[in-house]
Each structure stands twice: as C-alpha cells, then as structure tokens.
Length: 101
Image 1 (tube, rainbow, N blue to C red):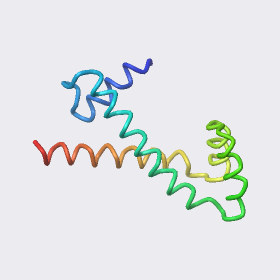
Image 2: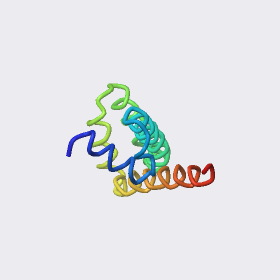
Image 3: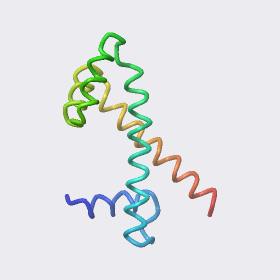
C-alpha cells in the first residue's frame, strides 16, 4: 500500500476525507508525530534505568531504525504501546472534531 492510499484510509477514519489532500496529509502527519512523541515518553519511562545511557548514545547517532530495534528488544510491549498511543490520539482528534461540529 502506498503512502497516498494510507493517508486516504486514515483520513476517512478521522472523518477528514472531504478536505483537500494536502490538508489531509498535514493532519495525518501531525497526528502521527504527536502519537510518536507521546508513545516515546511512555516507552522511555519503561526502559530500565541502567539502559538509559546506551539508549541516549544510540538515539544521539540519529539512526532511527537502530533506536527502534533497541527499544523493541528492551521493552517487550513496545509495539502495543505504540498502537495504543496512535489509537488514543486518533480518538482524541475525533472527539474534538465532533465537539466542534
């Protein structure tokens, strides 16, 4: 599935499919960034303290895949935490949309 199809599906789920595609992309991207930041705060909070220096070193290198691998290896519920945060951000957005309509 390509990026545009993914954005179209997410936009439909969020109820913004009638907006121009550029606006849909911006909203979906912004919500994704918010979800990622929120999830990382929770995930890093679950990282054992003795692993923090190693994670800081890895994340400082800028290799996102290496950092993601490190977190997945050391936080068994990493994927579920990410999914939960994406779901929460999407639900919050829908609730706000509904309240404003």
